[in-house]
Amino acid sequence: MGSSGTVAILGGGISGLAAAYKLSQIHPAPKRIVLFEAASRLGGWIHSSRNEDGVVYEHGPRTLRPVGESGITTLNLVQELGLQEQVINVPYGHPSSLNRYVYVDSKLIRLPTQLSALFKTTPPFHKPLLAAGLRDLFTSKSSKDDESMFDFVSRRLGPDIAEFAIDPLVRGVCAGDAKEISVKFLLKSLKEAEQKYGRITFGLLTSALRKPPPPTYHVSDLAKKAQLERWPVWSLQGGLQSLPESLVEKVTNAGVELYVESPCTDLEVRKDGSLVVRSGEEELHCCNVISALPSFKLSELVEKAHPTLAKLLKSIDSVTVGLVNLEWTGQRLDHDAFGFLVPSSQNSPLLGVVYDTCSFPQGDRTILTAMMGGKWFKSLFGDHVNEEALLKIALGQLQSVLGISDPPARAQVHILRQCIPQYIVGHCDRVEKIRRYVDDNRLGLVLIGASFDGVSVNDCIHNATKAVEQLATKLKI
Ligand SMILES: Cc1cc2nc3c(=O)[nH]c(=O)nc-3n(C[C@H](O)[C@H](O)[C@H](O)COP(=O)(O)OP(=O)(O)OC[C@H]3O[C@@H](n4cnc5c(N)ncnc54)[C@H](O)[C@@H]3O)c2cc1C
Ligand SMILES: C=Cc1c2[nH]c(c1C)Cc1[nH]c(c(CCC(=O)O)c1C)Cc1[nH]c(c(C)c1CCC(=O)O)Cc1[nH]c(c(C)c1C=C)C2
Image 1 (cartoon, rainbow, N blue to C red):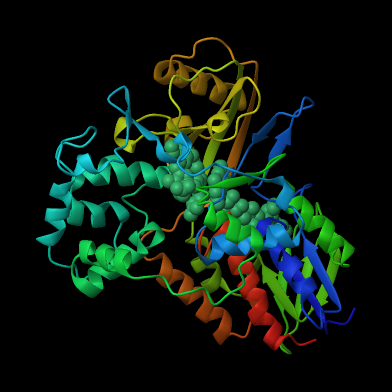
Image 2 (image 1 turned 180 degrees about the vertical axis):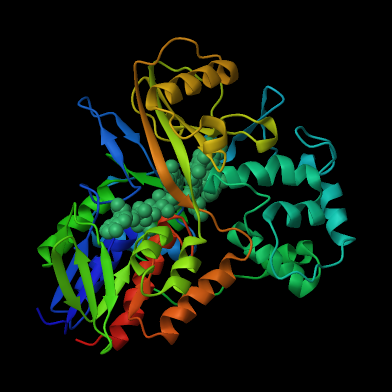
């Protein structure tokens, strides 16, 4: 088979599917677009299950934010796919968008959102939050180019904020340890403000006062509606899995070849710059390969020919999450919120619990998702923990925290192995080195996926779209 005009995509998660969709839309489109997926289903970590009675559980992501260029890219895509009627949003000002709890010293504490917390000591903090602002004003800037989220916030705003706000935030976004995760992961603009103004408060003030410039990119009617109505987050009826399902339908109709249960087992770069993708006995010659694989998986494929690259790719580690969906009949919560998070200082097996039916009610029932382990999975549960044991642990925790003692009407447990990449200190440099190696060695590889430039679904779709736009300008079709 000739390589000219054939593009291979490795991985059929949302990144790979978004790339396949975008590639099938460009003119002229490549002659062949072939996607290899190792698992028996497409969608990667986006996984919803639909019970026979229509009740939906999410085993991966559940809500997306509509903000920023990447939030708009996803809503644009949703409209292009004709899914706008299926969009459900949390209304502006809804308790699930305002109330976030932390579980500290055996108590659920609502994180303060009111201005009074600036002047009054409000638990779990030990000082009024104004003290944090004053500390920032009197702290000089650090010369370090990168540091951990915990160190940065502890230094600038005090250890209280680092322990009770930043540490749980990191657990609630990447199931990781704030003492290891790079400040550039979630607080890039604050780190830049420190470098530019010496104080993060000056940076916050300047950006609050500055009118954002009008967008230079397309904003669909759906994205405009989300902005106008100030949706905090949104999802899809039937679960977020409807998004990859719709992409699969569209790309199949556009002629993209999708192979499931077809792991890429070898990737060879020939001297003439063409590439050979192997999946078991099959081999495909192509002009370009888009990898939408987790970094550690791609590392295995390039290990033999490019050990230096393999080592760099492998250094972007991922953590395992035990995820337990639980359902009870009736309303079992005495407060409305997005959920609660547990700071690592509490040494709990729980990372946090999402109150799914508070954001999106599903009749007269309570559905919660407990997430456990993350960075601490192995030290908490060992190598051989099974689903039954995790269910028991989750139920015990929910009894202590929420006082729910009767057994759930239904439950599902999933052990999500190596599901969230960890952007530890130095991540940006690592990614730059990886990309430089690929360019310098003319490997013809395009790297997308959650391992590199953002873990949210929005980031994955946006980065896949941008990468294909760039590739289109130099495609050897
Ligand atoms: C529990 C959980 C909750 C989350 N919550 C949110 C949320 O609320 N909001 C949000 O925005 N994001 C959330 N995320 C993050 C988001 O879901 C992921 O970052 C995103 O789905 C990753 O997509 P991806 O396509 O880059 O990678 P993946 O989904 O990992 O896809 C990679 C694909 O490659 C396949 N593969 C692996 N090896 C091979 C091989 N050798 N050959 C071929 N295929 C291979 C895999 O089977 C997989 O299908 C959450 C993630 C998890 C795990
Ligand atoms: C307890 C563990 C986890 C919970 N969600 C995730 C984990 C690991 C994964 C996750 N959650 C979000 C993202 C996307 C980040 C983004 O950039 O949009 C990912 C990968 C969204 C999110 N969840 C929480 C926050 C603060 C955010 C960021 C954006 C937003 O404000 O929506 C908080 C949170 N997550 C979990 C709970 C229980 C919780 C708060 C109570 C579960």
